[in-house]
Amino acid sequence: MSYQDDEEGVDYGGHVGSFPKEFGYGGYDGEHDITITSTSDQKPRILLMGLRRSGKSSIQKVVFHKMSPNETLFLESTNKIVKDDINNSSFVQFQIWDFPGQIDFFDPTFDSDMIFGGCGALVFVIDAQETGIQNLDEFIDVDKDVSCYDEKENLDEDIVDEMKERPREAENTDSDSEEEIKPTPATLPEARKCIEQLRQFFLQKKNEGSPLDALDDYIEALHKLNLTVTKAYKVNPKIIFEVFIHKVDGLGDDCKMETQRDIHQRANDELNDAGYDQIHLSLHLTSIYDHSIFEAFSKVVQKLIPQLPALENLLNILNTNSAIEKSFLFDVVSKIYIATDSTPVDMQSYELCCDMIDVVIDVSWIYGIKEDQDAAAFDDQSSSLIKLNNGTVLYLREVNKFLALVCILREDNFDHKGIIDYNFLCFREAIQQVFELRNKLQHNSTTNSVGSPMVNGKNSLGDGHLSPTLTDENN
Ligand SMILES: Nc1nc2c(ncn2[C@@H]2O[C@H](COP(=O)(O)OP(=O)(O)OP(=O)(O)O)[C@@H](O)[C@H]2O)c(=O)[nH]1
Image 1 (cartoon, rainbow, N blue to C red):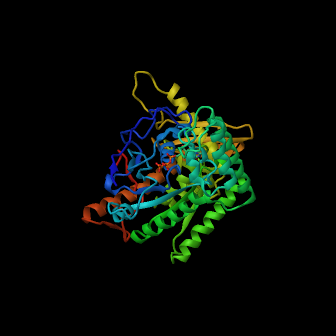
Image 2: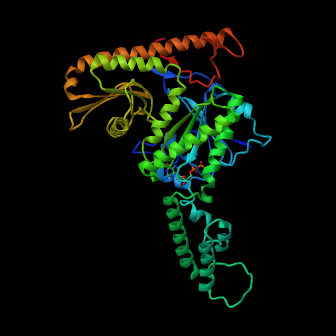
Image 3: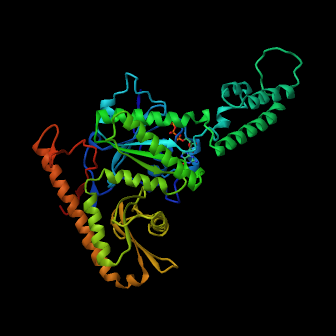
C-alpha cells in the first residue's frame, strides 16, 4: 500500500453550482478568523472507505472541491490512499483519506494502528444501486468479448444459452470449432439486444423480490462494512462510524427506505452476533446529485466539533430573541453547516440556504470585486437579504471569511431588522469567545506538556476532534 501526496489545490475545471473556481480554501489574512492551528499530523481524520466504485472519490470531490456531479463519471479508480487536506483558515479543517475500494486489511503494509489511531470518523460508502442491474454493461463488455457471458453462470440458463447462440447464428459460422466467439459489427446489435433482455430479466426478478446472485456486491459491501468497523473499533473505540447509503438518486422513496432498513438490520445483526453491540452506526441516504451528500457530511463534521452544544445554544438564543425560525452556521466554501439550532432540519430549508450562498458568492464575484483589486468575494461586509413570495425572508450575515449565518424568518418579523442585527453582533462575539477559550486551553496544554497534552482529562491533540482556535488580530 502506498500513499499519495496531498492533492489540495488540484484544479478540476468544474464546480458545483456556479461557484467561481478561485473561490476555495485559500490563504487568509486572519481578521475575525476562527482557525485550527494544529499541524497536519494533529488534524482530525475522516476516512472514506467502501467497495470499488461505490462513490468515495466522487463524494470528496463534489463536497470539497466543487466538482460538478457529472464530471465524476470520468474519475479514475483510486489505487492508493489519497490524503486530502481541507484546511487554510476555514473552520472546517481536517484531513480526508480516500481509500481504494480493494483495500486489504490483511496486507502486511496496512498499518491499522496508524490509520485508525488518529481517526475521528470513518465513513463507509455503500452503493445503493448495486444490484447488478446497473453494472451489467460493464460486467458484460460486449464490445470486447461476448464470451464473457460465461461468467454469468448463475443467470437463468435459457437466457445465457440464448445469448451465446444468437451471436453465433448471426455470425453464420459453418464450423463446430470451439474457437472463442468474437463479436463482429453484425453481431453487436444482437448482443446488445440480449443484454437488454437480461436487464429486463433482472428487473423482473428484482420486482418479484427473488434473491439474485448479482446481489453479491451488496452482501460483500455489508461484509466489508462489518470487517472494517470491527477492525477500526479494536484499534480506536472513539471512532464515529457513519454509513452512507449512496447513489440513492436512482431509487424511489419506498426503495430508499427499504434499503436503509435492510442495511440497518443486517449490519447491526452481524455486529451483535460478533459481540460488538456497543458499536453505533449512523446511516445516511446520500447522492451527489442533490444536497443530501452535503447534509450528511455536515452531520459527520458536527460530531467532530466539541463546541457543538455551545454553538447550538447560541443559535437557539439568537432565534428566540430575534423571532428567527431556523438558522444555520455555514462553512461557505463546502456548504456544510457546522451547527444549527435545535429545531429539526428540513431538507428544503437547507437547500434554500445553500442556494442563497451560491447566489451571494456569484453576485459578489461578478459585481463585488474591482478589477485591479485582489480582494475576496466573501468578506466581512457580506450580507444578503432575499424575500420569498411566501412571506418568508432569508437573511445572510458574514461571521468570518469562511463562516456565514443564514437565517429563515417571517417577513413580518423582519420589521425589527435593527434588533436582529444587534443580536447578530452579540452572537458573533459570543462565538469568538467560545473559540478564544478553547484556544487558550489548547495553548496551555501544548506549552505545559510534551507528548500528549490533556484538556479536561482528554487528549487534546490527535483525539479525533476538530480543535478550532481563534486567531483574531485583536488578541
Ligand atoms: N448515480 C450516482 N452515481 C454516482 C454517485 N456518486 C458517484 N457516482 C458514480 O459512481 C462511479 C464511481 O465513483 P468513484 O467516486 O470513482 O468511486 P470510488 O468509490 O472512489 O471508486 P474506487 O476509487 O475504485 O474505489 C462514478 O461513475 C460516479 O459518477 C451518486 O450519488 N449517484
